[in-house]
Image (tube, rainbow, N blue to C red; front, side, top):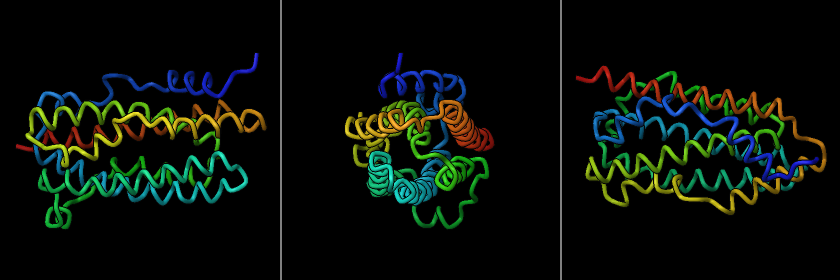
Length: 224
């Protein structure tokens, strides 16, 4: 029996769901135990990730010109990254990661592996397979952002503007999901979906995201 795009997406998200204990920083933030300097580092690393991912998504949209549904998905992702970047400034300012902090900050190598791999996918990945892998990864990211936004208000006294970056990703994105489903269905109809590749892409995205959070957790442990 042929699966629908939604069935494949749900199955992929389930298979690639991260270990709930993999993100060691999230519980610290959730209970207000993370250092404020760690929150600043998160802002500075996200500044890099957002800019890098936006360029990668624009390239994917260009590469997908012959696959209109995939191109529309990646174009919308790029637009979303631009919107997120606009919201990141208020969070960065609130946690002390302004221009002075950015100039003195030393990037964490393991925080840069995720955007580096997204850039690799932009150059090498089959577009529809990348749509599926990214969609699965975004499901976990949205949950992380919801937890962080709540904790920032409760434990760190941040206002709605400062939490806007995380609120943006925590909110449901039905239009983006519909574009993903359209791209997946078109890929299924054309026989372009390779589930083995999707799982490989998604597993590596998950692993690199885990490295991102673990690097920040290690930084937090070093702060006295």
